[in-house]
Length: 328
Ligand SMILES: [Zn+2]
Image 1 (cartoon, protein in one colour):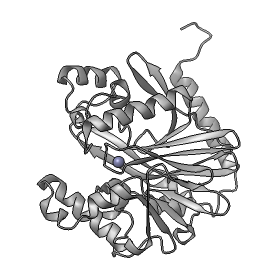
Image 2 (cartoon, rainbow, N blue to C red):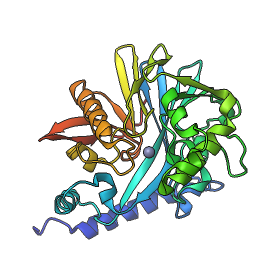
Image 3 (cartoon, rainbow, N blue to C red):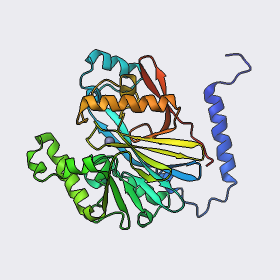
Image 4 (cartoon, rainbow, N blue to C red):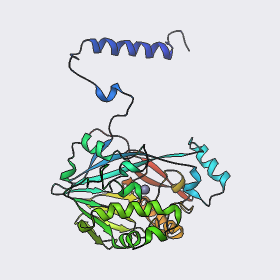
């Protein structure tokens, strides 16, 4: 440090003093910075445009899974640990995100999945709060597309009192997804670890059964929004492609679930994939599509706010998050 340079601490102190001076001149009476006052984060929603469509990602909160080998059950343990350490990630757990997407077409408000509601993990189930923060009335949602029927995607259909959270919405799900979860007796015949998932899916989907439209994966939702078959994670798992006025967006749902592990080695098996080999083929197809077409992607479990791109790296890929922008 030269004589003319001030220490970092002095500079920060000076900036702090400047802020303090500036604030004393502001008319702060009556202003209550509620979000900043407590220990909680500011509510999570993030908006951007795709052509004429307004896209809002809404945080349903965090999901915590442990150990990280759930994301790569067949990976050599030392290789997985080395990958996590190289990315400065904890080796005992994964703190993932749950990013719900809303597309406002001007005529319709279409929600893609509904988060996990109040009965899954205490760090999740925040969609209702963040919809309110974004000024979105649940009654204004016209269509809900369910990418698949896992807890973190459908358990938010009902609120804590068991009431339907989106009173005017119609639901869309893939026919094979509905058939898989809703088959009679499945809550008793499913493998034990899966039973809570089956009971939950049947309770949530059953509550809105008469409002559910079953489609073939690949069918369109609107002229500019089309589903993509993405089986393997679950039998009727779907991604979504949005294309309008020369712009596009991919909602990758659960084709890849960890921003490092799933992309660095897409061949590794994710513990929650129903058909691991089929899921690997789907993962590779979707990642190849995203990288080749340089698509903007919203990943349901990618780092908040979920928007980014996929680049090739070695034998795999890497996730490149979008830069935050204030303008639509
Ligand atoms: Zn998921």
